[in-house]
Image 1 (spheres, one colour):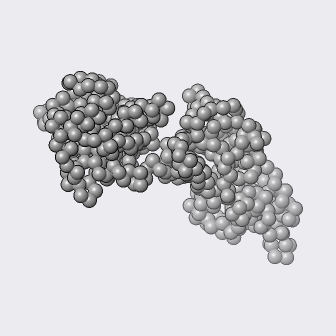
Image 2 (cartoon, helix red, strand yellow):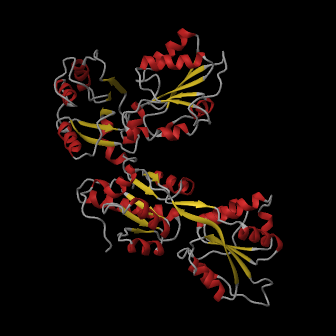
Image 3 (cartoon, rainbow, N blue to C red):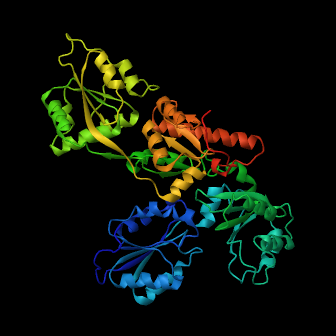
Length: 556
């Protein structure tokens, strides 16, 4: 995105106050996405930490090119002044709020500033943390029998805590939700952290056995919920903090009948890969579907390119290949990768050709992603290896031998990478076919990732690494080093497993078939099994990165 927006349009400026929810970017409303797409200026949320900041990128993806993004560093009043000033210059301004602009986010101050300046404004409601965080934690605020919800902002000094606590102690049909329960020791509150709140509620008549829950970093992949009682809450939170399993803020305190159901209704934190930081060593374009599937399992995928795909050094081979396809030189074309499909398609489009040029040519494909890209191009593959043998060798097993009486043409076009193995080419030759092995693209080792990523790989900050080919193993180790021994190593098939073992890595997960979706599912099943075993043993379900770090990973 460009740092400056387009030229202003005097007299047409507006301000939109957009609630984005407490964390998950998927909580943005349709109207919120619409105004972001129209914005000239977007003022983001002041994030409480780097983990919350990760959720900003998907929101800004709704914006058009050229939008000006402002990260607020000044006081709230100054931010409001900035928004109004841009609107007065004719720009469409969007200011984002965590949650709902008019519920705990003080959006009314910006609305007042717009009204005073004569600037049109719109409020786009969002999912408030009052309702969103309990839903993500698995705590129903108003289950059957509960008729009242009390919402309190602990930062406000005017709250009469003794009266509130005494009033609630006399009832069993109300839920209490407290914003910002960890507040400084002021206003006559005794104790630190949650001590003052626990003491206030206990003094008001609530027994120490009263069920309570605290959810921190709600609706993010760093969410953590502690379900306890008033008498044990402070000690359990301190113990969790000492182990580094929780982040201090933001937090929501909940007390009421619905808390008792948290364990059985906890759907978000129970995802098989919840909070796992997963390294995907593929380009952003290649990793899109894999990363999306991992997010569905609760993981936080991080794409690190290990290979740069570049055109062949000389184009003559590809030109002859395309000409041969058009003139009927080939009986078969075999695609072994998505990159090969892309290379042929791009060359076709340069010449003004489309899938109709494949009329009369049989097409083979290795891998479900390769087949999917062919279908997008308008080509239905005629041949594929067995599901459990998605490789060149597997394709040879099902390829028909050349029959001079039945096959009018004996040539096969094999567009591949410059470093591809000879297994498929040699196998087809043995079957009597004449193979044109053409370099459709070159694979070059990508530049090393930034230093923090390299340190995270070697230091065990990643919970898992998913290798989708032997080259991703070789190149990741070459540009970033070996993953730490606590990191789960998952591979797409036997060939990739063999390469990983050669590099001294212990393989934990092998996909049952050679597809990225099967690989992600296999890792999910591995994570679910590890979680179930830990809980059955009465232990916390730790992520691999939270486990004690030992020596460098070695092959078994």
